[in-house]
Image (cartoon, rainbow over the protein chains, first blue to last red):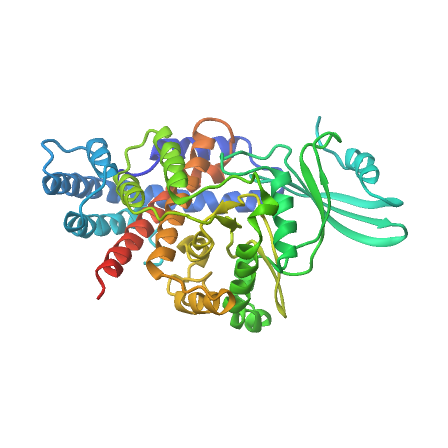
Length: 115
Length: 333
């Protein structure tokens, strides 16, 4: 469950592009201003929290690969294995690993999201 | 050719029987699903307030059957008793405006935050489940024969289509793949496809003090499993922050299921309806990706589109909780 795109650098570029050519309508510009404040707060959280998140993500991927008996573990390989279907017992274990990680990701992307 | 008020003023009168005088024509939205105009006119001296929905410029996610089918489904559901705007005329595309249709404007509020918070709508909220279930019953009893040719989209068709879209974005997101694998293995069969609205959720209803006045936005209509509409209505994105009230942020699933049973005589299998809730959440996740990639690939240079990409995290969490609930329901005695 890598952090999603746009990446931090893509978001920074998107904000800069908007600021170079802001909406001429003041109401629309105020709306985009709100989006920019939201994204800047997200970027600040990402800078602080992403290293720990990524470490935990690697661990969850590794444990999930172990449950499925995969030799190697990366997100793409795991996604491919998941897409083939997971047996019910393994699914319970996998859900218990990934749900806390999803919450941790929301702490970066939207900590106010109701859980 | 760009659609303008002048062009509409030239085309519409020729489509309608009677003397038409257009007094005002203004664009309401030019968005993902339609180019929408409000047209005020007189027809044989009688004042008219119309909405014109055109295909022009609309994005195609590959899920919409087109404006002609949209209008025909809305008409047919209305004849079956669903509250909808009356379709005045359907444009074939030959008139110079592209595919589209003209319908009567209905009164009512559609904005979810207003509907969920304003005291004025409290009675409408109290009656919402019952009225939504009655509208769904009408949609689902619409004879499919009158919509012969409208595409059938069963669960498996949609799951495969959405996963192909997801894969095209090239991000390896194991939660999407986990849910895809489960949805594929557990897809319900659809022996008797019914008319499905396809986007039956808060935001697509016109509601007055007296309750549900109109079901809008039929652009994702198709033939399929009626439980799809019940599941989509409960997707967390359409609860607008009220996670504890699964039906549109207003009521419980049980209330909806009982109201649907009362309106149709069909007992809702919670596992079946919640399968579609998970599929709906998966769909919303892919739509968030679609919007983000429309920015990333340079099709729509919008900061809003960029921002929505980071809402995918919300859909991943929602998919996991939905899947956990489903596995627990599966094991319930």
